[in-house]
Length: 433
Image 1 (cartoon, rainbow, N blue to C red):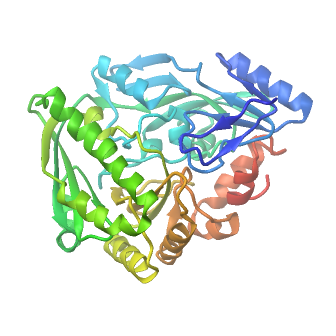
Image 2 (cartoon, helix red, strand yellow; image 1 turned 45 degrees about the horizontal axis):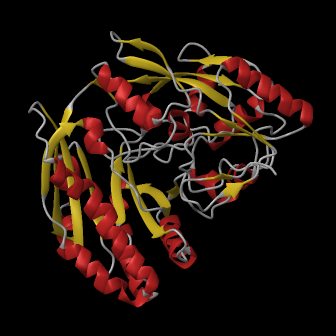
């Protein structure tokens, strides 16, 4: 029987006709040759943290887990070149060992470097772009087996488009990333009231290097998170306090609350109040990647949308009204983050400063009414769905929202004219190759 592949969220699975794990560029080229000879589609998988079926195929799957080495470090230029299958976690460790860091990160480190870039992974911070904006170069193997080295001077158009490539342009095998000297962050997390957070939102986003907040549905409670660069040394909590803050409360305690809500959905509003009462103030100083990354032990499904930054408060209040009006029972917080505009054709922040609004549901809980309702709100605000998160949009819906849509499509037509890297997800969101 064919090998079964499942994503992290356990909401997507497929049975490829073959799974290969190349350990070199030559082995990637050879795998693509076998797929061409057999007339098979090819999909690349990294950490499997996308909630869509972006990596699913009944053709040939290429796992890049063995392409996970550091290729080059240029200390003078503050750049690092790594193989595309390296995890974000390993990348952070390798950079820290060399006194380097990425200037921003998302809060998950399970993804592969290539997968995180391909889907537009981002953190928060009004002055900072998403992870693809740090890309200085990449190596990509096309459907024909040609190996392209892409930089500002060599195949610049491919680099421009492939920074958020959705796996549609080829197999990325190496990535060169712009880094910064390692830095510490002063982290302050504290409970606030939703009304106060929204009233002060613009000031808080501007005043902090990295600002975000979570709102707990069925309550007026939020947790704001402000992270700022500091020259102060690391101030670690005790092992117990760190476990309580990073593992027990967000995973064990909150996991028990979510589980109780699954048993009796009508208890969710009361359970949300319990969570709100246990929100406390946390302050610490640590290296940037230790602050940015969160421990996630509860499996969930997620939708996230990018909207113009100045529509943030409107979006949150509209979601609150949707939950109230439709009597929806939502146990997970709504997460709100901020990202600088960029010029990447399929980036969710292309051409505009962005607010990202993320919603979640526990794995196995009905989510469609909630997700579709939020999607209607986001569509009305000019929203662009996160490529790695669940959504119901099609290419016809999405094309008008991206000024450089046709530029990306021209690059795709050049590199993959026969649709070797196509699958149902790409057919839906990009159209047939």
